[in-house]
Length: 66
Image 1: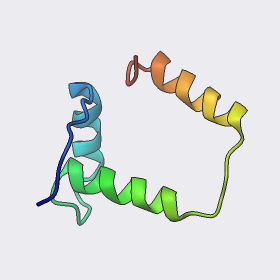
Image 2 (image 1 turned 180 degrees about the vertical axis):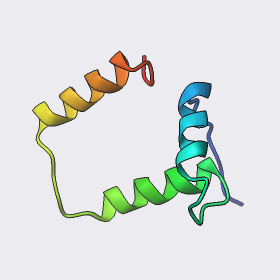
Image 3 (image 1 turned 90 degrees about the horizontal axis):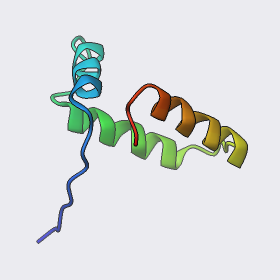
């Protein structure tokens, strides 16, 4: 049996993702997010720590992260 956890996302973000994937082959936001995360994990491209901080700040500024 697999164990699961819950990740909270702002409703506005989920609505944006739902609109984005409307014509895509994903059945849910969960499937899309899983696809993107796995794709990123398998990517050999790396970002610098400074770039990761910049992206994190941008997401906080947009209200997607606290």
